[in-house]
Length: 84
Image 1 (cartoon, rainbow, N blue to C red):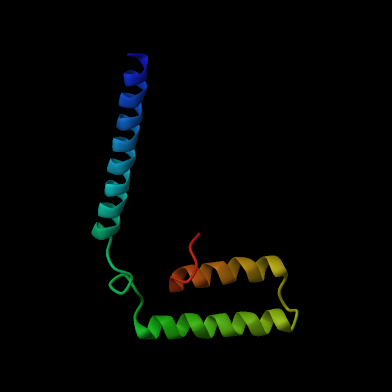
Image 2: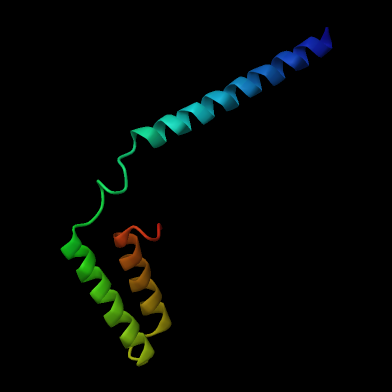
């Protein structure tokens, strides 16, 4: 009978894993699509222009790597390209 207890525990673990997977899928379905949460074309153009300026300033060595990295991460996060 000890073996049956182990089988029951394994079955419960499989069921919990299945339910967790279903919950993750449902949460993904309920999340708004990326297009709906996106930026307007003007905002996106402004951020891309800001990114180009940032790159130029870094190439000219007028800003440090730390500042460049922080600003780059902020801009890419706002664009939805990179997540924090």
